[in-house]
Image 1 (tube, helix red, strand yellow):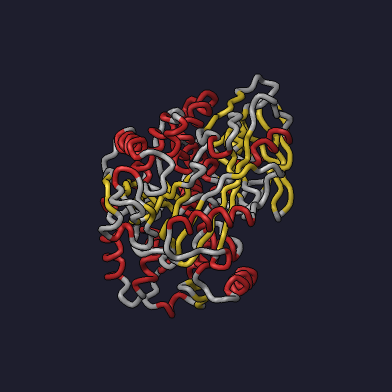
Image 2: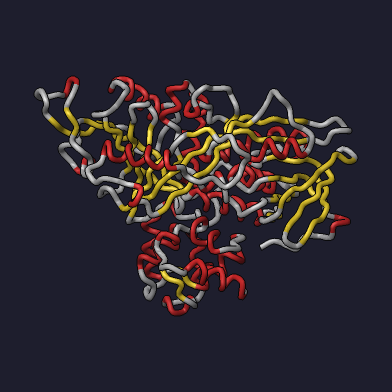
Length: 518
């Protein structure tokens, strides 16, 4: 996938990128495509923290309009359709139902926001907003009837599901988005090293002399510029390098999600409004489940692996029970995850109101201090545009790398004709008639046109080697190790895929044993 690291005596790069989340991987891809030499180091697995703990949406951020984040929303809406075209295997359209029966916001305000949402970003591919009666049609299936109120109330005490607005956004396999960016960066010459951390770095002759540590030991590398894309650790990196300042910082906010057995039929999602004016999404997940999230809680500890709290579980269960007929309790949760969002500290009092916009802090260097770019904030939808903006600063030092190229450049596996996933799946099914259709659909969603690289000359499941359950076979594991930096069962079962929700007990141990044997 990439050549061995050169010897320490001559290991030198244009850029040393710290952090293997979506922003670091996106910048690595963009920079490598412009001809720069790039080393990206990630202390854990790719997307092992914030970038795999999202609500898994490519969206403009409808609720950000309440905080007048018009520039961010417009940029995100433009990127939404652009990314859909770049990776139609891992990104697809999703309709959202926004019930009004329990809304703390007047219907006219919501409709006005949706009008802006439909038109602010030059929408072309996705359908616009419509109004539906939830008592007459499948969009209301699974919802509770509520006491009627307002202009649509038909009688005192009468109950109904009321009206709802239905609008469009997109779903994304967030971890895979990061991996695909890293793969494309590597294909363009970048070096990607996981389980590798920056332990020290000093300015030296106008550039950086950095020490990085991996399971193979410590070594020194040189870089002309350092990009700090460490997410929740961005402040820690600045302190470690002696570059921290009081006038900039990151505000850590924890967001948690729960996964429960499916609460309703249909392939649409719900945007649920709570009395505290926060919103929670309920989204079809992995065919048999519903994903519910997210929360917004201040994180005051050092960055690390986050866990959902009992209070967050109660909040998400209460939200679901306010809207759905099928009750949800903590005992129904089949999986949960939490992540720490590294938001730029704009000193908002409410964690939900903290800006999701990004700030790039560029220190050009002066001959004594080496140049560095630090990334604060950001959201998964705008990672590509963030990388372009980062490259504008980087190009001040590397004028030869000034030309943007990523808009419309497909990600690995995304070169599906006209983005027609169903047509691609039909062709794949015809090519592999001996493979179960459900297996082919999952592989096509994960790998797109690279599915053939996974299947090779296999014609039946038996040709794929040891069966670990849930449709996972040895051949796919070997591909993930070779092509996608997977090193553990968790990498494979919960980041490169969500097969951890489908495999039998003991699979993780069996996968780790297979990896150890290899």
